[in-house]
Image (tube, rainbow, N blue to C red):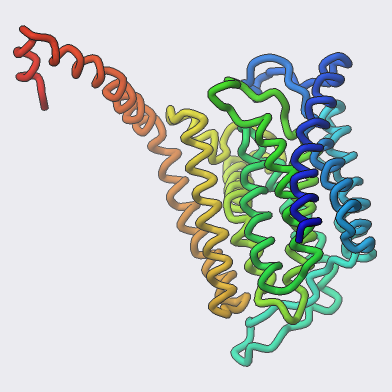
Length: 381
């Protein structure tokens, strides 16, 4: 136990130091993310958070003595995803090129990395496991690529993709602990520590008004891959209370966002791979909510999703019930967001009026406190 706590502290410290080291050298080399049509940040920011998380977590996993097979499967194949994402950060690959590379990595995981969705639980009334047979590898590849891209697509605001990954990792560590999967618990918490270290330099704070480093495509895609691998490891153990569908709830916010945005683009006659500013966080920001409020709302939704997944697993709900509930909730989400986007101008005006009233209220209160300003009492609603 002491060694594990040391590993988590080591991960956090080393990731912070490595992030700062990579950030300074990336600035000197000009390897930065610059503002553009879709990127509204201020100044040139190095997207090296993913590399720092990867290196810090790998070092800690080796130091604490996690199974060599587990480390190799996660970091060797995850390193491919990280490398492709890092190259994309600076060379801007086409969507199909990225998709091909991610598919190759997911296939390698399914074939040689010990990570395959081989069965589903609770789809039959008998409660027996259903073997997927020859469908196991294709389903695993599709699911993994979907999660990788969901985290990549939602990475459009400081702290969001990393924060969602942190919530999912903590949920996974909880389920792995209940299942007795010691290596997965340690790996999940190591990754959570590394992600938390990155967030310390990425989220806005009173002493830092903007991010000093970005996660980058390398980091968002690696975290998406790592979560896919960990979910498969826990859910495919017959002794675990976690079925594969529980993982959907840990990833609720990025999956809902990516699926809805893709469907909305296709309904508008556009390619689902063409980037835009129609994600969930864009909706809140364009409505006038501050970045901090938007981040808090989305992380709270993620926590609720993770809690629902853990509760479903504890109640023994099978994949059929969990997938059905997930699908119904997504249908409700899609209906609400479709209506919300149509009424977006009215919502923005309402938020602006509320913020104006909130900003002027202290001024009126101070004025009322001044002797001779009794006439202000008549202005109260």
